[in-house]
Length: 346
Ligand code: NAP
Ligand code: ZN
Ligand code: ZN
Image (cartoon, rainbow, N blue to C red; front, top):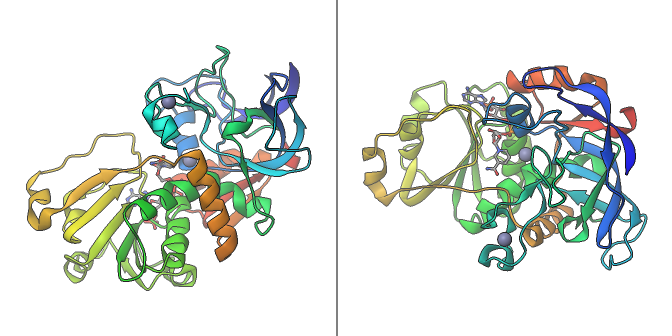
C-alpha cells in the first residue's frame, strides 16, 4: 500500500477536506498514474451530498482523470511509464457478459466498479481522482492523444464520452438538428461535438446570459427556455434533444420540440423524480431515451475524434482548496464551463 494525499468528503454534505488514502500496489495488469488534472462533474456533487441515495464515506470524488503513467505491473502491455492517459467513470467490469463483450462495459450486467463511491473487486472502497495518484487495470485506462493538453482533456473522460456516445448512437451529423438543453459541463462539450459532427446545433439555456459563448462554441441558434415563446418558435423542430440539466425538467415541454421520430435523450440525473404525462409522447412518434457514459473503446474513439477536431473542454483551473467554493458555483450554474483541479495543489 502507498499513502497518497487526497481531498475527501468525510460525510454526506460535509465540506471536502485534505486527507490521505491508501492505494494498492500496481498488480500484474495495473497502471500507476500520477494524476495531473481532474474535472469536477456535477455527479461528484450529487454523490458527495448523498443526493442519489446512500453513499460510501469518506468519499474521494473525481472521474475525469488525466495524468501520466508512473509505473506498470509486470503484465501490462498497452502502456509505458511517461504515457499520457485518462480514466473515466469506471475502473472494472465483469468482462464476460454480452455488454462487456460488445464494448458497452458501462452497462455490464454485474454493474461496473465505479471509479469512486463503490467497492472494488478487492473488497475495498474505490477512491477517485481528487488525489495524487490512482492505480487502475490497463483495460480501463485510455490514451490521451498528443494534440490534447491534459487539463482540457480531463473533462472529456466523463462530459465528453457522455455526450459523444448518444450523439453517435442517434446519428448527429449533417442534415440533423440537435438541441442541447443546459450549457454547463456536459452541455458545452455536447455543443462542440455536435458541431464537429456536422449537425445544426441549438442551445436551450435558462437565459441568454451565455449566448455569445454558445455561438462561439459552435451553436447555430440559441434560445432562452425562461421565455415561453421559445417553445412556440422551436416546436417540432429537432431530430435529437440532449438534456444535460441536473434538476427536474418539464419533459412534456421538451418532447414537444421533437419532429417526427425524434428522440429526447436524457443525460441529467436529478435527485428528485420527474412527472410525465404520457400523451406528451404520442404525437410525432416521439421517443424518450437515456444514455450512460460510454464504453472504453468508444471513450478512446471520442478522445481521438476530439484531438482530430481540436475539441477540448473550456475550463476554469482551480486549486484544491477551492473545491468547496467551486461546488457552490456549479450548483448556481455559475461555471464556464468546467472546473478542473490542478492536482499539483493537493
Ligand atoms: P452542470 O455543469 O451543473 O450543468 C448543468 C446545466 O443545467 C447548468 O449549467 C444549467 O445550464 C442547467 N441547469 C441547472 N439547473 C437548472 C434548473 N433548475 N433548471 C434548468 N436548467 C438548469 O452539470 P454537468 O456536470 O454538466 O452534469 C449535468 C447532469 O448530468 C448532472 O445531473 C450529472 O449528474 C449528470 N450526468 C450524467 C451522466 C450520464 O452518464 N448520463 C454523466 C455525467 C453527468 P443553463 O444555465 O445553460 O440553463
Ligand atoms: Zn461525471
Ligand atoms: Zn460485464
